Length: 372
Image (cartoon, rainbow, N blue to C red):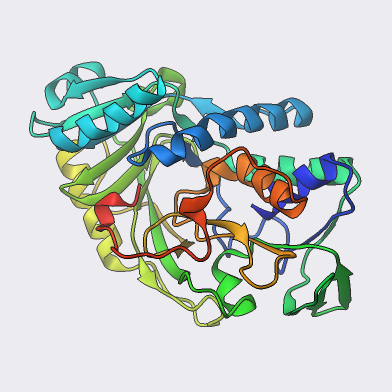
């Protein structure tokens, strides 16, 4: 989010400095790796305008960088018939092409998948996956191309806001700026301690599993779709063969609370592997579900309602906050950067940001099934 915001500011001709506490391209946060799901399909209609704008902004960044930033291979969102109908209505009301399939129809269209008719699927044909590492690099390269500055390995130690400026103390020096945009992910609670919306870092486990038969069916080039499974197994997602040759990527969309400043390494919990193996054994028999070929960590920063924070600080209005992306924000990075830029420049964003207010009242915490 910080890289996309710096790119948008630099493109506007603003003097911008992007500070990264680790080395560029690190794997300690939420934006590393080769793939993320990109989609229109959402349960909450507030995300549809953002999705449309995000596709447009990714296309613009791809044009400027000369790199392909996402691949369309479709998305199957599998759930019970009632929940699937709700999600289909969201897309219908926004005019997004889609179809609904029974579990049997899913198997006919995608022979590597096994579902009975207690499952229904929403098919989003414009969905697919983004090349996450390419997206970040493209935003950073365009930040530099438009005259911005990037400093990595320079953690922020303290933020001291003033009425017309903000002082930022780093491990190397001190900066003064008219505006500060904080997109520090799991480290926001350490930098901004007085927010009413709770931001909880979570450790998420990702697993990669080898394809043991019919490998052609798992190739995005053959329109092997990305998958989300909800209800029977909470939230579980699959990205076809992208990160590693001959393997798929799986994620369980909930984790364990973690302090990102704790230097002790927390391993991926065993239950992540167990849940993944059980689902793959039942629904994807072409996958070797005995043991994953690789397990990796990722950080989420959760809000209690799983909506984001896109707002000015309630007291220090020259500080803008982008955070709490709750494991589903990467696909919106390009438009989030534009929104944060407009907030910093005191311009209308063109979106209803009230669901993303830093002072919103969260009266009911949704179940994990509502996270996506």
